[in-house]
Each structure stands twice: as C-alpha cells, then as structure tokens.
Picture 1: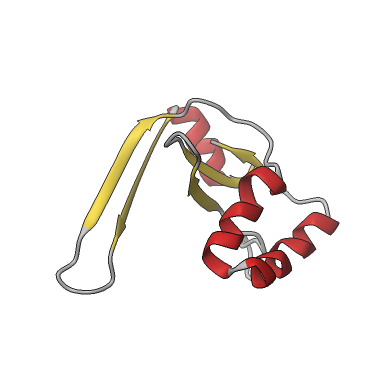
Picture 2: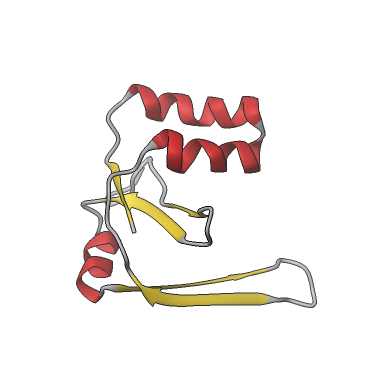
Length: 103
C-alpha cells in the first residue's frame, strides 16, 4: 500500500426505499470534503458500447456508523454470492474498521 492508501475501499449501495448509501473511512479526505460540502454526486456508466450512464446528485441526509450486517453483507451477497460475500466480510467483522461512516 502506498502512502495515503487504505486496505479498505469505499462502498456504495441503494438501500430499500431508494436511498443511496456510501461508506468510507471517517478520517479520509473524501469524507471530510463531503461533510463540508453537505452534498454528494456520483456518475456510473456501462462498459459496453453504446455507453450509457446515470448521474445522481443531492444533499447528504445522514452520517452514521457502518453496520456490516445492514450495510455491507447484503451488498457483498448480491454481487459476490453468499459464500464469496461472507468471505469478503469476514476479515472486516473480526477487526475494528476505520470504515465507519455512511453518507
């Protein structure tokens, strides 16, 4: 890992009800800038032509601790399957994580 890099990545998911949830290290520069701005935007695109994209922008409605069971495990299961998703979550559940805020 280089200077300023973390072994943890930020994550993003759409919660039931349509709210976008983003998690990252509370002490990261990204988190500080987002807290200061009070707003967030994201753009995602497909990787095949013709490229399609969607962008979302809006106010940050909450900053709260990450709950692995509520926030991360369902997303890990969705994208990685049950077994691989659980293997991905396991090391994070055993150690205190600096990834401790959702926006």
